[in-house]
Length: 187
Image 1 (spheres, rainbow, N blue to C red):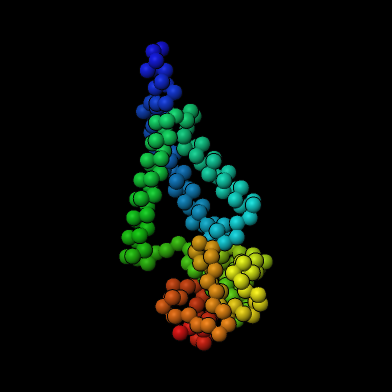
Image 2 (image 1 turned 90 degrees about the horizontal axis):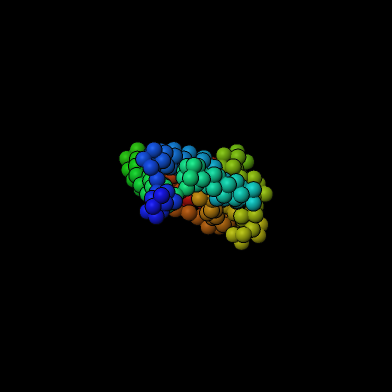
């Protein structure tokens, strides 16, 4: 084996291997993005050590499975290019579909009104009461009654309207559960 053949064996890839990396990249990208769409809001809201470990493990397994039997430089470049193209293509499709058909992923959700937790909404977003209380403390809320309206955002953050404050109706137009919010909070 010549030097160049040996080098290609270390960093290169044959055609079936390249097609395998391409297909694995597409399929696993779709699977991973589906997992994030389904569980992303809960994982972002209050990630536990276990959920971070599970996501890291999923990422590692996905990366290893994408690269095939023997990871090489060319295989890695094909995987990276495929993932970037998929992200761009699906991002464009999502943006176009959202604009045209008002399709969306997780929506902001009302989880507390006048200091009362809406347990069915908490279940919907996958959040426990103790997790919501911890987030309220981190946001500087010292008394539950001080939170007139709490909205869980799609990325896991909270929007808090404190007692005596109001929020513009246009700001909450797309919020799930806004129909149960008293008019006194909306302006």
